[in-house]
Length: 200
Ligand SMILES: CC(C)(COP(=O)(O)OP(=O)(O)OC[C@H]1O[C@@H](n2cnc3c(N)ncnc32)[C@H](O)[C@@H]1OP(=O)(O)O)[C@@H](O)C(=O)NCCC(=O)NCCS
Image (cartoon, rainbow, N blue to C red; front, side, top):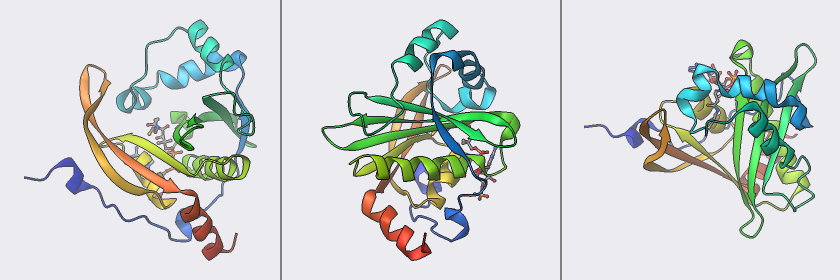
């Protein structure tokens, strides 16, 4: 019988195409006034299907956003979050890092509103997030926790050079079910080596 892990190719896809940064996106530090917009994205079917979101009111979410940092050079926060902005559409999603400043690792998160999906924005946003994280902080390692079956998310991290490091069985409670989670990790030196190879 095939296990969830059998479905995962642990080798990263580091093709030139995989490392693309187009379309161009910008990361803008989040503020509580964007809570209603973020709340809508959190409640989209695909986001709910794959993420262990706590049910929060817009007001509670505004409180969370107000407590998040937007500049990794300031290590007084644990959670950092940015809006993803593109010229054509304005704000289209969010990216985040939960940092452990003692261990120097960070868990990344990302979401693109469904109406803008499959246009390369997710991949470009995560590439920009990684650039920012390694340029602005001393984090040595980034990782993502991905619900099995979340193919779009898995494709993004693989293309950016993350390695499948394992699977946490029945780890997250999502919509009443315990769901296995793939762990994908990327080390600072792997990102730098790949950047040198592609000549960025
Ligand atoms: C994951 C997510 C950010 C992808 O955003 P996106 O803007 O559609 O991503 P991209 O357009 O860069 O596509 C990335 C890859 O996934 C593929 N893809 C996109 N949507 C897909 C889907 N529904 N099913 C299968 N593959 C999909 C794309 O074809 C692309 O593949 P390629 O690199 O081989 O060409 C978005 O689906 C999302 O916000 N999901 C809900 C939140 C979430 O699960 N976040 C991840 C938490 S770990």
